[in-house]
Structures are given as C-alpha cells and as structure tokens.
Length: 183
Image (cartoon, rainbow, N blue to C red; front, side, top):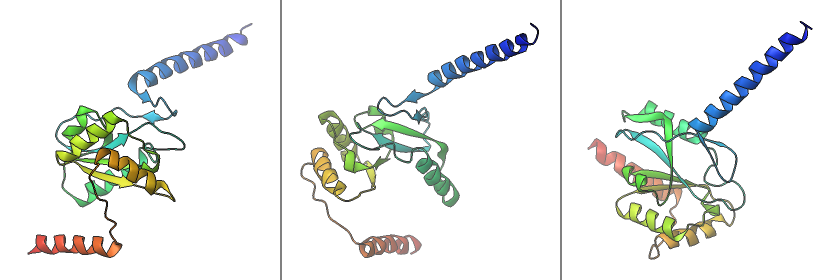
C-alpha cells in the first residue's frame, strides 16, 4: 500500500503543475485564432524603438507570422549592435493594420504579402498610417505572390505606381546617402 502513495503523490504534483502552468500560459499570452503558435504580449509603449509586425487574416499557408519571433530578435540584435538607438531588443509588437496603436510607431513589417488580402478597414487603416509618414517594410515574394501583393497594395493606395528598382539603383541610393552624411 505504501508503494502506491509516492506514485499518487507524483501524479497529483504533475497534475497541479500542468493545471497551474497551463493557466499561467493562457493568462499571460495570446494564441493565434487561426494557427496554434505562441504570440508574446506587446511591449509597453515608452518611446523606445519597438519592432512592429502587421497581422492579417491568413488564407492558405503561413502568412504574417512566418519566422515570428526569430526574425524580430535577429533584426533587433543587429540594430542594437550597430546603432545607439534606444530599443526594445527582446520585445516586439503585433498590430492589425487598422489598430490605432500602430500610429505610435514609424516603421512596420509586412511578412508574406503573397497571402495578404486586406479588408476595407485594414486598407483604410494602413493608408492613414502611411499618409502620416509610416514606413512599410515588405518581405518575401515567391512565384506569383507579387501579383497578389500588387492587387492588395492597390486596395490600400489606389493611385500608387509601383516601380521596380534594380540592386544597382538601391546601392547607388545608399551610397549617395552615406556620402552626404560624411560631408
């Protein structure tokens, strides 16, 4: 009889840890409604630079959450090592395109736009943010995904003309900026 008590005690302790740990996990985090993955709480706004990723409804394979949060960590580590910007290096924010909190941030990242189909509210929110000076980083196109991005960005900016730049044009622009900084 004594042999079974330690097993029961261990089972009871394991159940308590699972229940308490699971409740703590659920209370401290959000889970994506579409996919089951951990979404960290947004960083509290305090004026420091915070990486902002835009979320959207995912149709098909992975979308806005691709490489989250590893990409944020890598980018912010590089930024911390190369600049003197005060930043949240271990935290980031995720906002819907129509979230008013987006207006507190100057730069946002849109991942996998080949699967992005903005609602009218999201298109309006992103248009307003861009009109106020927001800078959008758009990443990752495969095959025909550019076509979808072009349709979607025209919902946001109906009169926009997209211009393809070559690597040479981009490097020339960068060098001009760097030379002007030095002079």
